[in-house]
Every structure is written in C-alpha cells, then in structure tokens.
Length: 178
Length: 421
Image (spheres, chains in turn orange, red):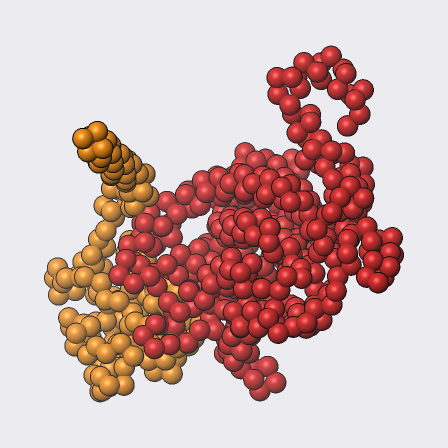
C-alpha cells in the first residue's frame, strides 16, 4: 500500500516538474520574442515601402536606376531587338525558367530589382558604356553572373533571375513600385 | 609568492576576504607550474591576449569619437584621422591590430595542430578556442563595416546575403539581420552595438580557455605529460620573462605597420564613402578571411544543393570541422616530432591553407599558367576537408610513431636514452 502511495507521489511530482519546465520554457520563449522582433524592420522603415517613377523622359534604349526600399530598381525602356531577343529564348535554355511576358506588364518596360541574386552586388549594364555580359543584358562583376535582356540568369553562380517587384501603372507614364 | 608578501597586513586582510593574490599567483605567477621545455611557439597565446587588450582599449577610445550613422560614420572616421588628438594613432593601431590578432591566433592554432595540443585531456580547451576564433571572425567582420566605406558596405551586403541561402526562411533572416530591406542605417547601428559587445564575450571565452588550460597545464613540444615537479618551472619569472621578450619582438613587427605601412592590409576602396548603387569592381575580404572566401566560391551545384547553399555550408564547415579534430585523430602520441608521417602531412596542410588564401585573393575566372583559379580552389578545398576527415584518421591508425622520451625532464637533461635502455 505504501509502495503505491509513493509511486503516486512520484508520478505527481514528475507531472509537476515537467509541467513547470514546459510553462517556464514557453514563457521564456515568449519573453525572448520582443528582443528578436525588435531587430526586424521598424514602422518608419516599413513606411518607405513605395516609390513612384515617371517614365516620360526615358528614351528607348535608355535605363534609369531608382531607389526603392534602399534597393536599386532598374527601369529599362527596351528596344525592339531586345524584346525580340528576350521573347525568342526557349524556356529549356534557362537556369530559372520564366517567360519574358511573365516578367513585364508592357513589353517595352522592364522593371526589376537590380541586385544580383548570388550575393547582392549591383550588376553592370545600366549605362551605355557598361559591360552587358554575353547575353546583352547585365553583368555582375563580383562573381561573373550574366543576365539577358529580360534580366534572367543565363550564366554564372547566381541561382535566380533578377526579381520583378510588385508595381502598377498609375497612368500610362507613371509607375508605382511596391 | 614569498611568505613575506602574505605577511603584509593589508595583503593579509584582503587575501582573507578575497584570495585574489593567491589566485593571480596560481594563474600567472610563481605558483603556476609550467613545463620547462616550452619553445617560442608557446608565446603566441599570451601575445594574442595582449593584442585583445590593446584592441579593447583603442576601441573604447575610438568609440568616443565615432558616430554609427550612415550620414556621419565615414566623416567621423575621417575626423578621427585628422582632428582628434592622436586619433590617427588609435585608428591605425586598431586597424592593424585586427590583422595582428588573426596572425597570432592562426600561428597559435597551427602550433596546436603540430604538437597535438587538442588531444585528451585538452579537447574542451581546443573547442573553446574554436569558439574564440568564431567570435573573432564575427567581431572583425562587423568592425570592418563601421567606417562605412565602399568595401565596408559591400562586405556587409555580400556576407549578410549568405544567409539568404538558408532554405525557406533565408530571406526573412536577411531582412531581420538588416532591420530593413537593404544594408542601411539600422544595420550599421546594430553592427556597432555587436562590435562593442563581442570583444567582451571573447574576453570571457579567453577566461574559460585559460581556466581549462590551468586544469591540465600547457602541452609541450614533446607532448609528454608532466610527471612531477622535476618537469616544471614556475611561470613567473621564467615564462613571464620569455613572454615579455616575445612581446618586444612582436611589438617591433606590429608598430612597423602602424607607423610605416598603416594601410598595408587595407583596401584603398574603403576610403570612398559607401554607395549602395555602385558595386566596386573587385570585392576582396581582409587577408585573414581569404581562405574561407576561396572555399565559399569553390563549391559548384551538387545534386539538389545550389552552389550558393553549398558554398555557405562549406565555409562554415571550414572552421567547424576543427571541433571534431580531437576525435578524428586517434594517435596516442601528441607531438608531430614523433609522428614522421603526420609531420609531413601537417606541412602539406599548411601549404594548402596558403594556397586557399592565394586563390581567395584572385577572381574565380582568373587563370594561373593556364589553370583557372576556380579549379585550384576546388582542389585545395577538397584537400582541406580530406586532411581532417580522411588523412588524419587514417594516418593516426596506420602510422608507427617513434617513441617519445619518458618524461620532460629526461628529454631536457639528456637522460632519455638511458631511460629507454
């Protein structure tokens, strides 16, 4: 009888111990979260999340770089040849397969984040005098990634195409990025 | 320490309440018995400790004039250089001190590898050391960002982007590290905070490192355990003097760079203020990260692991593999002096590390006498890991080591042959 009592006692103590540890662990986890989350983007950082671009002054064959969320965004007024070259590529030839029409809203305007998907350098190709790589688009000097006229990765260590940000046409010549 | 010292009433009063004098004496004084055959390779631990102190002192002074804000950081460093009294000296000591710290610690680590200092019962001592070098790497990286030059900014961008290789949550981790959507003011602020914190973490780790050291005492060039008082001499005055002499020689070397070639280890690009819209044509890390950088870039797409993720795993593995070393090396003999095969492979490994550093300093598409650097880097990376994971276990099983002397004393007094007979 006394043995049963001590066994009961043991399981009861075990239960109390384990539940105390569990509650303590959950509580500590909850207490840690504010410290972790305080390092995430602050409200004022998040507030700077859209940028408007006037497309009017950009001639065909020209590119501009605008800043959106502290990142460079490439806006390129593509030439007919560039569009043709981008659309002619077979999807099987791509490292990160994506059709050109899925990367643009109007085929003459290519808008994408100008950050190499390898390790975050800014690819060259915005200025007329820049090297544009083997596919006539952009070339990242850091580790040698080549992007085509649709900003898709074609050669080099980068795993993904240059990302297309969310954007919308406010008027025919104004775009809001973000 | 002499009994006379402890008879001083003030010392006596303090010692009774806080035995700090005997603690110091037993740690680095006449009360700490040290193997009597230590050579100059045993100077580098204490030298590294002294440089850590120099870094903390100069860093505290620099922080008084530095502003961790993207609009002022670069200018505040220039102000330190031009206007703050002796600011140039503080900065040049701190800048070159970083390189010196890594140089000393790398020599200290190769010393440990050569003489088998990581072996039983010093496994934890070695592992704490690996944590120290990891903390040093994090500290050095974040410190490099603070002047907010072009290399600072792009080093921060490239290294934080490594974490985007983590599957699924990679991008969230990077945003969290940045505190925004790119390397910007929140990033600079937190790097300053961590750069100030981590040296004190290193200091604490060094304390634990020394604690573990003092349990089984220093290893020594023949790797034979201390068998009694005849094998030791007191740390003070013998090794305090030897360490001081080494410090003098080292300071000549260190101060040569501070006064005559202060930017020898630096990249000129870092005197251009950070520009988030222009990447420098050649991003190259500080020399002490070159071997790891070569490993990062050497890995190709393997199976389902992308080159980016594979490179990151390999780069972390580059340092973390050292944690396994005490169990990979099964040879009971510590010192490479008595391990003819291991000794040769130690030097091959040393050269392999130099080659990795040389590859890291070159662009991957560059070519050396017709051989692309990428391939040299890949071969050297494979060899690096093979050294630890294949060669060391195999050698330790197959090698027939020579017989070490019976004791430190026997080796020093030349009675080793007698003992062996």
